[in-house]
Image (cartoon, rainbow, N blue to C red; front, top):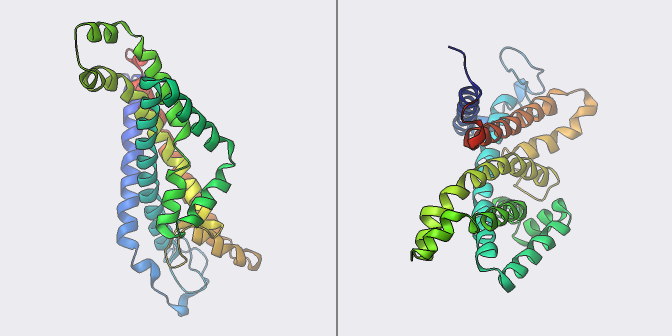
Length: 273
């Protein structure tokens, strides 16, 4: 039987999620071995024994990369969830209440979007003491405006829908209208936007850490691995940056793939494709 577009999208989304889950679990298991040093095997190029080679302290780069990806994925999921919650609350409040509430939230959205993204993340991370708390706050508090604007526009359109006006005229309370009528129609767009935030959150976490304003050097984060490898590229140890960098790009691409396929599955126009 020929696979239609939605079935293929579902299969690809399941595949992407399974790979991301496997990387996260493998990174958790490799977190302790990733820190083991062995100077008898330092600076080894990629081989069957060490697929990603070893670094200047004899640490296995495959284990360090998996541990770093696992940490980045967990931080990315946390920050995307926090920023998504902020976007949902502010975007809905802006559209529902209107007036000065809408003006204030719209001004706040424009303010955050008007500041250079990486600069704002660095400032928030420094203000929160860097480390895990700093990078989490920096990424979470700078990724909500675009999604909040999307939520606001969706709610404004739904407010004028016939079924919502009929529900209000029948005396349905505002809470019931939101939970049983507005939220189910809003969730598809919101979930798609939320998942598409994951790759941005992971990349920005790695970028802030790479610049030295994120996670501490003791943690096997991808940003730290890439920052440390810069000092050894001139010596010909290309594997220290190449494989972790490609792995980071692969994880980001998988998140983007999952988000795009989820959007396809949740779009009613593709139901018969």
